[in-house]
Image 1 (cartoon, rainbow, N blue to C red):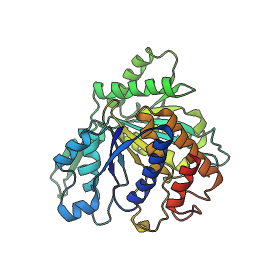
Image 2 (tube, helix red, strand yellow):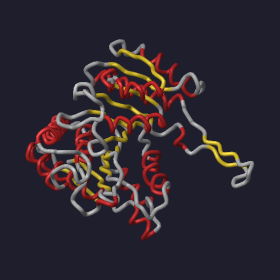
Image 3 (cartoon, one colour):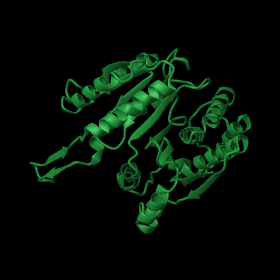
Image 4 (cartoon, helix red, strand yellow):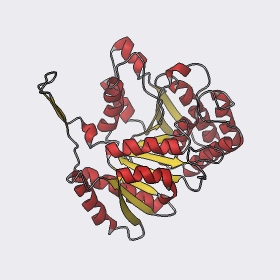
Length: 349
């Protein structure tokens, strides 16, 4: 029995999460697993009605669950930044979800914008530090609104935070990947303080993992090589800001946001799983949105819970649906409705 908190979110989020839960139920039946799910109406609609983002009582309940399945958050009537900081970032920071894990994988039958790249060429993982860097909100204004205005945003990088992110990346590379190659993504030639810390810690920790090949690349070079030679990468580890940027690039080369899923992890504690794409409000209720990213997020959740066979079966079913049935991954271009895609994954599972 696994206790799962479900936050369907805004826009098309509930439709996507509904199909993920359908597949999760089928996986439970096949592998003799049971899930106790509790739904929470957090997001833009609740905020507009009540002014609440994440009540303390709800947060306390979320902490008691083993995992959180999160739909897309974002509402056209809520000013940008409110939901992100009050809900998403609060969950990340207060649950100390210090790892953002983003697989970048091209499934058979999915069209990548990269010419002549095949599924075996695009199959890597980004490990992003998730609770420090520029996202801590450190800084402020001086003489705001005047001609002499100064805005300061500071990147906070602690030895503890850097080391636990690197340790997870080394362990993941050694335990989960075949090639066992770990690349540090940074900007040591300009950000000489923050990435001096990252690079020194990376080199020191590599001595504990003689079976993992290590290398380093500047973030701008990473962006170029992800387009030109994605097959060079196995696992990439980086800070919060660079990780945010290169994972969206990764989503595009794997076929788009319709297939991209991610995990926000605190190993051994409550962790959160989500589709990467937005809430796509213009498609709400049309049964056109692609649910595969949410379904892949549920597979990542199963893997985190230790149900590796179930997770692999869900992912294999997704790959089969992509290969045999989908004309495209964008909303309205799949050749199937949202519910039909969920049914197909369930059938192959």
